[in-house]
Length: 114
Length: 108
Image (cartoon, rainbow over all chains, first blue to last red; front, top):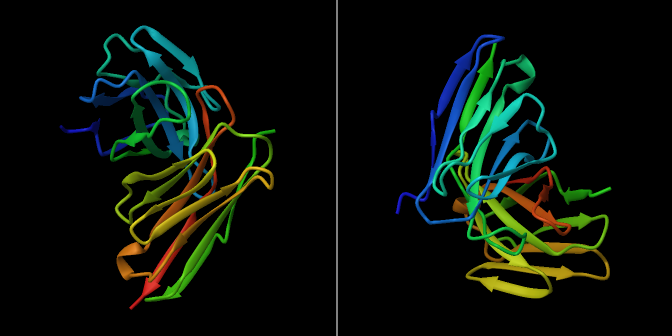
């Protein structure tokens, strides 16, 4: 089992560019989520999905889009990158929705927007 | 408002010391998790608590629902315990709210 994988590990963008952060899991988990981690702040939820075809906004969704066409994949799209989106992004998955379930995290993507 | 507070922010200990990290939250919760973030950045789940106490090796986690408080204890600390420890709280629904983390350094 690879668990939760994320690509790329590092990325530098210019303001206004778009890109997709990839996330995949091979544990047949229903729940997947994207977080950003900024210095001095806790992890904050961007978007989440409770199953294929179902997504919802988290605490900080502006500037990001998601889709969930398969159980395995949950890409995060930055439509027009801004310096405020410089952060470390983590994808996570758990067996099902609800906060009783253990979350499994990907290794993270460090994004810099110039 | 769903708030999660951790203390201390930073902690330095000598190898072998008993360590306590605290997490307080503002309203009733459905579940509380303790996470460990390694120096390389990876995050792993240590415990899920909804009541009482759990133990895994040298790690012990407790929660007091009435006082809205949880503690993570490390007995006989070791340099390999050096990491950031994060409290994550579910207030119902599908979302977690996270503390800012406690950075622990254990000196040999």
